[in-house]
Image (tube, rainbow, N blue to C red; front, side, top):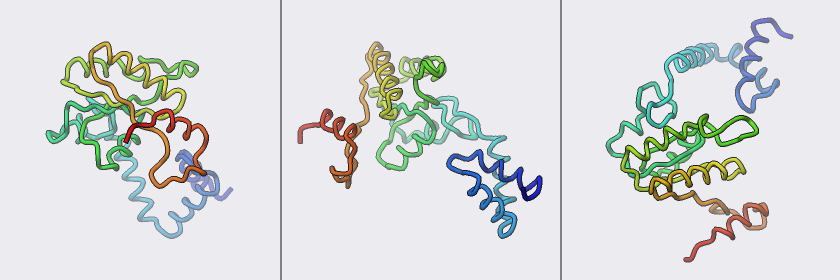
Length: 197
């Protein structure tokens, strides 16, 4: 125990993913010993973001505007809609630099054991978008977990009822990966989803 305020700072830093007691202690002491200005900037930025960042009215990603910059952009292809589980997935797809469509963020995946059903994921909002907008293709980019696959299947079935073309992102061997280091489940999926070249 260092002091009540330092202990409080350490405990606050532990809310971050992957930050254990030692990492939180190092961060807290670094900010207090070597970078108080950085700590003050961090505190102000965090307070400002917590107060102003909300969900986009259309896609449900995080933004301080009613519509995020992607949904507001006239340059994006409004006929392509990519469904992802969370805002970090939007960031990941955007970093690929290849997708020029728009998004819908589920904020989770179907998990009946945890009480997460279609209502909690906003699937009615997604279906409303599919009815209201000229979506030519719905790309389902949920994670390749059991819950992610179940979510993808559920969304595909609902979207097909609206005559929307549905595709699923590919999963399998990463570019630059070596087969001897790929786990059996990933390799089996890659073989099952092979395509002609």
